[in-house]
View 1 (cartoon, protein in one colour):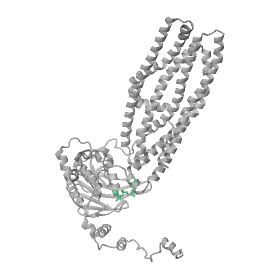
View 2 (cartoon, protein in one colour):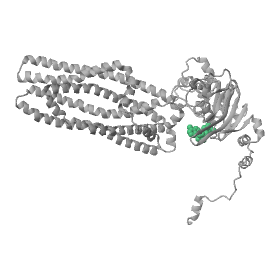
View 3 (cartoon, helix red, strand yellow):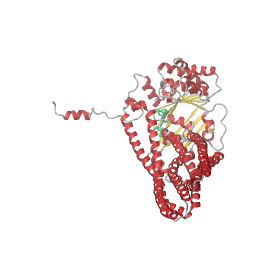
View 4 (cartoon, rainbow, N blue to C red):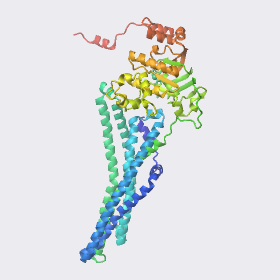
Amino acid sequence: MTNSSKDTARLTQTDTARQLIGWLWRKFLSKHVALLALSVVFMAVEGSMMGALSWMMQPMFDLVFIEGKTSALWWVGLAILGIFIARAIASMGQKILLTQIAQKVAARLRTQLLDRLMLLDNAFHQEHPPGYLIQRVQNDVNQINTVWSTVITGAGRDVIALIVLMSVAVSVDWKWTLVAFIGIPFLVLPSLIVQKFVRRRAREARDLGARLATRLDEVFHGIIAVKLNRLEDYQSRQYRELTDDLVKTEVRSAAGVAAIPGLIDMMAGVGFLGVLVFGGSEIIAGDKTVGQFMTFFTALGFAFEPLRRLGAVSGQWQVAAASIERLKELLETEPKLHSPAQPKALPVGHSDIIFDDVHLSYGETKVLNGASFTAKAGETTAIVGASGAGKSTLFNVLTRLVDPQSGRVLIGDTNIADLKLEELRDQFSVVSQDAMLFDESLRENILLGRPRITEKQLMGVLDAAYVSDFVKKMPDGLDTRVGPRGSGLSGGQRQRVVIARALLRNTPFLLLDEATSALDAQSEVMVQQALDKLSERHTTLVIAHRLSTVRDADKIIVMDKGRVIEEGGHEELLAQNGTYADLYNLQFTTSGPTAEEVAKRRNVPKVKQTRPRKSIWAKMMGRLPRI
Ligand SMILES: Nc1ncnc2c1ncn2[C@@H]1O[C@H](COP(=O)(O)OP(=O)(O)OP(=O)(O)O)[C@@H](O)[C@H]1O
Ligand SMILES: [Mg+2]
């Protein structure tokens, strides 16, 4: 199941409009109640001015045009001018106020979303790709923003306009008014159907938008892979298919939104015809003046406009509701991994790290399978083993990026699950395979917002991590921007920046996951020295494939299929002649054991030697007639 279809499934139980508006009100709008009230006053003025204008038709026609009173000309004219000026001021005022509220609400919503998303677990982020989340934070908030302003303006201004205009119409003749609006109740059922349709289409459109954003995000992040694998056509096709779907869905949704005003227009036509036939005869009979008729018709003409807009509001609301639902759901998603209600204090001083029978699986895949070991305080413990053995996962468990299904991880005698999450993570500096840099200056990437670092301290760290070497060659030195994800630096430079970060953090524990893998032999020696110096003062866990880097570790543990199969010092493990010895010999002795010897030592059955088979290609060629 794709993410988006999962989403649709989860969101089928639609929140009612009242719940959504209630939520939006409580969380965001209620903070701006004074400004909202003022903008509603402006809207009321704007809305009622059309009623006033239509009301002025009566004196204009009866006194000025028919009776020809010049004195009335002035006051009627000035009153109409006043009405337009009041409308202009009110309209501007409400727009400014509403934009202000809308922008503030959007900003708050975005910040809250980001805070919540940063809080959510890795599992959540694996299920929801960055593009999808960016779409939520940017576009869905925009949707809400524009639409709820339209809805509020519509509901505020247009409802008031409608009430005033209807009152004017009723004041002229209630029977005419009844005739004019007689068709409206027949619109209720179709409009409910259309609303459902629009909500569904809007949801589809949002999902497609998120998938489009995800694809863009993947293409731009993986632009080099796209080019090198010649994926341009493939990506372009995939993107085009999605955009085609989006076009269809958006057009359908817009058709739905436009359907209600369309129906209202038709009803308006019927209403006008009815009143003309019904009311015209009364004027001819002399029961009503032309002025009264004009006032009624103007009020009616004006009334259908807000009515059309209100008809559209319900559709627009459905579009916004699709976005609000999603944002509400995101904001209400709780992280599964969190600090305990009553966190314990961390043990003082350096402590051992103990893994005790830790089991962890991702779905059916067992990754840690009873991992147990102790990393002694102040020592360096190396973790080696085949790719996929679960080494990095140990670090993820230790920093609580993921919780194991069973077993305990202790710092000293405190279970890490009993510690405050932030405090736990403050204990570790992690230098990993993929050095994570932000698109900021080198300086910011190293300081990461820590203001109390002196220039001298910083320089010391830069020297120790061999960052100074390449900073000198950068155009703006430490103020050079490193590009998205540090793409302006080489892999080795990025790793050195991350090492500098770790030096500066100066935490009790140092976790190195292939920290020097991207360095050339010369820099590796230098950085290794820096790390060695650092590990002297820290409890260090180091994962390495290159065994030369772990030879001097106080203890080496060998992982295989999620458990520790050997542990001890380098010499000790060599003497055991087990997996470590095999790995070591493979890496360091040119006359090391052959694959066959390794298999024999591990009691792996020897692969039966058969005569090399002809490849399918050779067979096919053999069948072809010789030319
Ligand atoms: N988030 C995840 N979801 C599903 N499976 C995962 C996840 N993270 C890791 N795995 C699986 O767990 C296993 C162990 O991964 P891990 O990264 O710990 O290996 P490793 O020993 O560090 O390997 P390497 O030396 O290649 O870095 C792998 O088979 C991997 O597919
Ligand atoms: Mg790894």
